[in-house]
Image 1 (cartoon, rainbow, N blue to C red):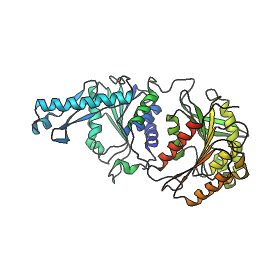
Image 2 (spheres, one colour):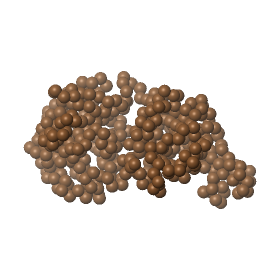
Image 3 (cartoon, rainbow, N blue to C red):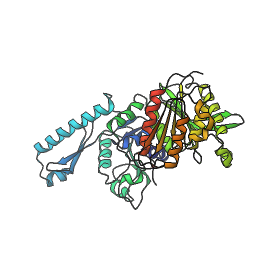
Image 4 (tube, rainbow, N blue to C red):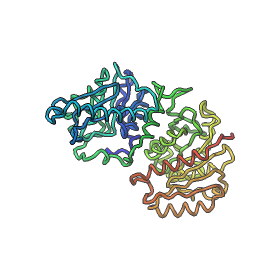
Length: 434
């Protein structure tokens, strides 16, 4: 099993752990790569999220050899056998502990921004990482959680070696892995996008759920499946609206894709972190998609997009928000066509590997600032985007991602797309005029 990114892995893992929803659960992510995965799991379970801060105590002059571990709340786990065999003196052990404790406290402040750690005593603790390799960090995290008073521990990861239960079976009450391949060499080989997670991303994940023990507060759920009536059909989608959202971006998928597209979900998650709402939905019913004429009917798709946008503006919690369109492949043509309509007014448009040329004569009528993102190794589509940009009369920019092909599958390419889209929308979102 190969995951698009940590967010997709977290969603799938959250589905696997749905049997825990009725328990008193707290989700602990191992920084830094495990935290985005854990954030998705916490959302699926309606549980609070925190980091599991663990520092290995390395033997002096041989720091790769662990003689114990430190956790928060003054918790320490010491391997007395290693201490004896390595002839570590009490003074040396104290010095290592002191140094690692300082690092632990510093990282806690950086990640939580002064908030207290989530209480784990008496609760079911779900320890999450983006994968298990040697298992040393996961083992230490489980021991730390146990020492902090956890009533039950579940260690869950997207991927682990086939023999991981033999290594870690005694550390947790339940072990969960989505995949345990025989050809395991490194966690990163099972992710298309395995970009390094920085401290800021960890802090953002924690801030999203701070003070919300059962998810986001507000008039309704933060993340929900929706249905919208458009003419004689009902279109299904997934609506995500962060608290105090600055605007909402509606996604138009390309041919052969859907609201379940991991690439668009990746971009949507980045927009959500930036405080923007998103609607990923299908412009065609399953029956309609079987007719290829519908898939390439830009006028039909654009009309559906416009009607869906109008319905969105009438929903409680989304009325009055600024609007943006994100179109992928042929969906970009529908987004630009719809953006040429006078109402509702669209604040910004982003096209990913799009076919804006299919919007034809509507291009000069687009008034929304438009960003065209194309892979540098996608020459045909790049040329079509250059021609289309020349016909636009609005503010526009063509951003070329070096070395990327049409689907942006190269390492880091999709993250670049997400960051470009995030910056474009946050720079151009303004109150909507209906």
